Image (tube, rainbow, N blue to C red; front, side):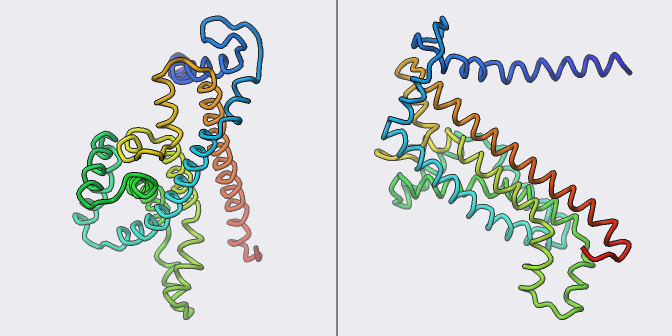
Length: 274
C-alpha cells in the first residue's frame, strides 16, 4: 500500500511539473533585464512597466474583462433557468438526451464552435466585434454553468419546496428564498468557471473578432508571432496570477460556506436558532 502511494505521489509531482514548469520558466524571464529568454542578466520591472504604459493593451484588457463579466453573468442566469428546466423533466430518456446535448458543446473542439459562429454571424449579418464575441462567449459558457448548478439542484430535497408551498409561499418566493439560496454555491462555481473560460478563450474568439476589436488571448497570440518580447511574458504572468487569485478566492469562499453549513446543522437538529 505504501509503495502504491509513493508511486502515485511521484506521478502527481511529474504531472504538475510538466504543467507548471513552462509557466514558471515564462514568469522567471519576465524579470530578465537582458531582453531575451536565453540568459538571465539581472532583475528588472521594465517589462511590467511597458505593459501598463501600452494604451492599446490596456484598452484590450478592459475589453476582455467586460466581455468576461457580461458573458459570465448572462450565462449564469440562463444556466440557472436551464438547470431548473432540466431538473423538472420527468422522463429519464428525455433528461439524458438534453444533458447529452449540453455536454456535447463542452467536449466539441473550439475550432468547430468558432467556425460555426463565424458562418452564423456572416449569414445573419452580425458585424464581427463586441457583439459577436459576447454572444459566442455566452453560448459556450452556458453548458458550463448548467453542469455546475444542476448537481447542487439535484441534491435539494423536494420536501423543502413542498414545505414552503404548504406555508403559503408563491412560486417566486420559493425560487428566491428556498431554491436560489440552496444552490448559491453552484451558481458561484458556474460564474467563476464561465469567467475563467471566457478570460482564457482563444480559439473561438479568434474566429469572431473583427478589425479594431480584440481580446487579450488574441492580442498575445498576434504579438508572439512577431517574435519574443518579454512584455508578453509579463502580461502572461499577470493573467496567470489573476486567474490563480480567482481560483483561490472561490476555494476560500466555498470552504467558508461549507464550514458554516456544518456548524449550522447540529444547531438546527437541536432546535437552536441560527
